[in-house]
Length: 62
Image 1 (cartoon, rainbow, N blue to C red):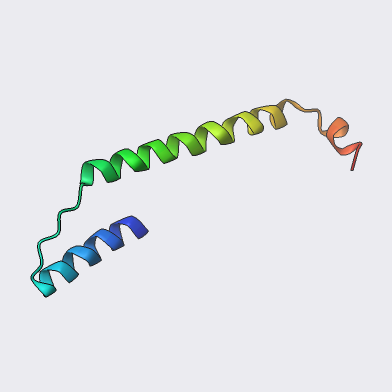
Image 2 (image 1 turned 60 degrees about the vertical axis):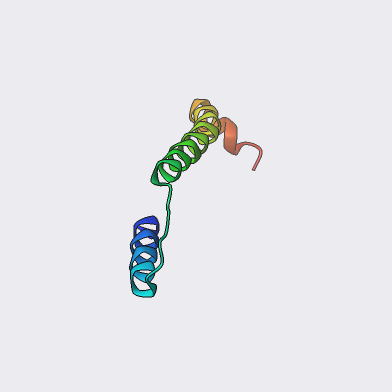
């Protein structure tokens, strides 16, 4: 939601100021995909390990 509002707001501001803005949408989408893949990748492994634990065994050391 923030990305969409930022892009639309920037385009409207550029239109109001009569300035040409070159925004590389391809790079923005690629960055979003790469960051999402990194987040999913680094979040999956700890979640996988935690799901494999026995709850009683995990709480024994609390």
